[in-house]
Amino acid sequence: MNKNRVLLASLSGSVIEWYDFYLYGTATGLVFSTLFFSGQDPSIALLLAFATFGIGYAARPIGSIIFGHFGDRIGRKATLMWTLIGMGGSSFLIGLLPTYNQVGLLAPILLVVLRLIQGISLGGEWGGAVLLATESAPKGRRGLYGSVPQLGVPLGLVAGSFSLTLIAYLTTDAQFLAWGWRIPFLFSAVLIVLALWIRGGIEETSAFQKQKESGEIAKVPIVETFRNHRKSLFHVIGLKIGDGFFNVFLMSFVLVYTTTYLGYSNEIALTALTIGCATMIITIPVVGYISDFIGRKVIYISGLVLMFLLAIPYFFMIEQGATWLYYMQAAMLGIIWAAIFATQGTLFSELFPAKVRYTGLSFGYQMAAAIVGFGPMLWTTMVDSFGPSHWVFGGFMMGGLTLSLVLSLFVPNTKNVSQYEESIEKFKKDNSLQI
Image (cartoon, rainbow, N blue to C red; front, side, top):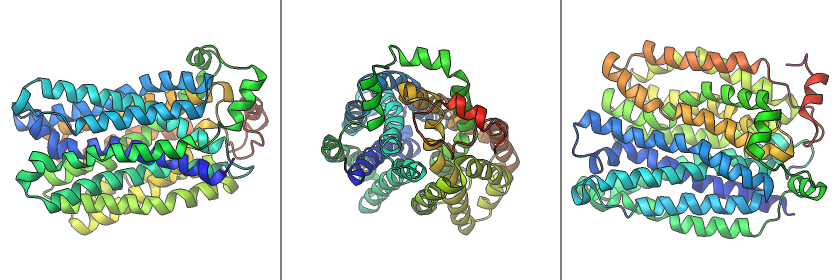
């Protein structure tokens, strides 16, 4: 199987899925709070809009169970085709939705339904995209290959935020709210057709083919995951929560935080976010490559420590002016969090055997995502009560990071696993003293 085609298939679908998911996140504060919750007080409207954003996160564990089941039973490739259709179709339909002024309460109800479909689809996409890459990786290059689908996050976010920014520059405020915001959502249809064509030309991963040929297919993957791999599952959930809260802030809520509460313009806030994502595009594959030599765990812990130490300085610096916002977004998002994220897919997937790998990887990650996805609702309440306090927000982030740091000490160093299908329990026993 052509390795480059596999990586392109993994990356293309990931880019589109995250384009759709974060396009919604970017539009939440800028569009949806105004057009779909216009019958409410502005603060309540913003809170309700972010509740729909959080619903997408809450739906992701459901998608991980559904698509994880089929991914572990019928294959990675077929499952990933359906996740693309679900995400792209729902995003396209969001672009056609009537507003609150046109149909009343039906508008936010339809928005919530389509957001749920988005979340369910993404719940199955991320884990499958990671496995498509890592299960096809040459020996000694799993870290590099596993980092490639992670590029979908910055590329998708940049594409989503850039498309809205471009339309905003080309239209008046009235035109943007009337019809301009719809164009990036409708464009999802074109991207999905392209990604389906790319994925249609690849084969099933060798790891799943071997599993199928051996007849060792889990009857109910989620049940077997809880029965035999609970420890690994809870490791994934705990490890993701710490950086997950900061990630949601850095890639979504920062737009509202800086524009609504710190007085930045939309252009400056979006530019700073784009700078951070552009830096990630360089950082992620470099760190993925390095992880094949020094190990995923060392990089992961180092990233968590740096993020912990810079939590309060980050919020303090962005209060000082535009230049510091650019610097801190590039450092925290583009370098430190990117280093953590580059290793996550590979590290987490290495904790599960092939027969439940899709389910275990996806469910653990998406459970954590469901928890951190409601961060914007918490932060909206916090900022109303305490203002944009660097002590309050920095302390909140440090709390989550502490949980991940503690759990990271008990996760095995997976660098020296020679066979991806090898029993992780045997590896833990042989390497229990390694960092």
